[in-house]
Image 1 (cartoon, rainbow, N blue to C red):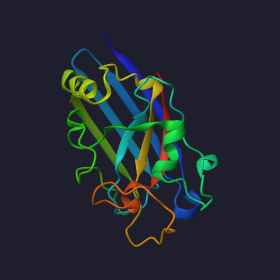
Image 2 (image 1 turned 180 degrees about the vertical axis):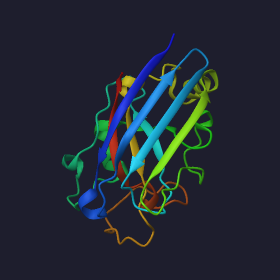
Image 3 (image 1 turned 90 degrees about the vertical axis):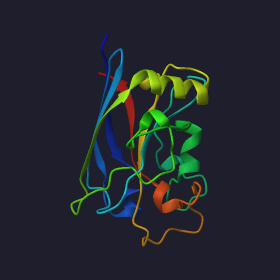
Image 4 (image 1 turned 60 degrees about the horizontal axis):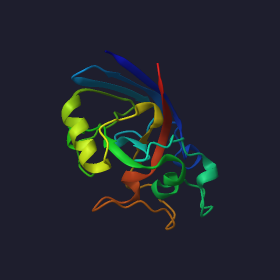
Length: 185
């Protein structure tokens, strides 16, 4: 049985970043594979962009963050500020989503025009097994998740109040630049 999902990805933090990152994500789930296709436009150019789906392990319906989530009023919605409405980072869209290894350097990099396209077939059973290990359920519940695209150039001056460091990666890597609600197609 095939299930299809999509997300319209809209800008977040665009006034500060200076670009209105936007795009689409399509997910096709079959019995043995999850095909993921994400295409982004107007992202910060020549920059690696972490991208993931976020959600709540208890199955609560995640929503996209907006400027209303800027709790410290610094003009930016950073990664920790998204958690109240979007939940936690769950599955990365890198070179091996089924391994769920979030911090790494295997995410897409935009070209000189701020464009990138990501496409991969993920072994569904392996992803479900790892998802169950981490979150206690093997049901991805894609229609209860949101997608985030992250990443700004390391020379962009961010306010000291911007949080979101993950391991050796600072807020430049994790700052959300776009988000979208995943819905059934």
